[in-house]
Image 1 (cartoon, rainbow, N blue to C red):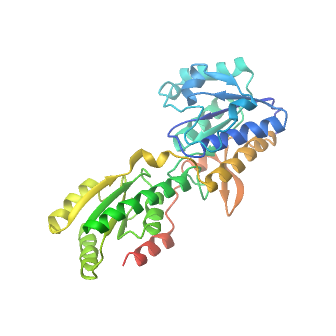
Image 2: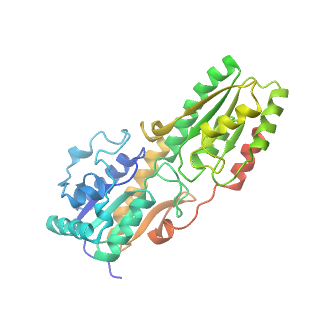
Image 3: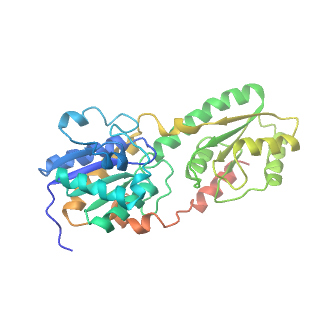
Length: 328
């Protein structure tokens, strides 16, 4: 397909926020200015596209956003965009503003919407993987994942202080939906006694035996990392089961929750978001449409969105093995 002449690009963030989204927006806008394009911010994701919450962006709009968490363009779920009528309304608003290409920053749901929208109306679009879950195929890392891991590990380090002081067993639940990437990294990085992830079901009996072994080894603290959405249940449910088997333990549960999605992005996330943002604009100019820009082996690659959202990305077996070895 011959590249279309692109003069105006709209950028939006959709779905759950992730640290580094602002850095990605900034990179997209800066790159657009570099190539003498007009840049438009679509506020509140697809819902803003439907409601015509679209504004032309200037340099002042992206000043001092690189270091900020969240997304200044805001994000929202849009049930109306799931309907043909809603998407048609969104398309008409883009036409009204003369926007002829899109950069969509978000997770699998956001990219699914982008893929559907492109197929229906043919507006050139590129997705950027903005999610702390790191669950998109076509990229080694997603924007926000590194920061979320750092946040989880910092919190667990603080929990360990009180766990050690009182000889307590803590169950710490981290985010990741149906993927154990944050959990496995937090488990390795915080010297967890065990890490439970959705991809690998650990029988309660095996966890009990591991904790008994650590008691015999005179371990002063025990922290078990639990990924939300795991096959063995959440942290509260697992803690209740362990309490019945090991009543002598003083057991506490901490659910880290949404604090993992906030905070200033790490250096890695800032650089990743910046690289992908520039490549997104250049990709659109080169005729790369309906693709996601990702990073594989430290090189930016473009993957069809249809593959990025359906490809099942597995936790590295070596990571799981390393976590198991280091927990003994």
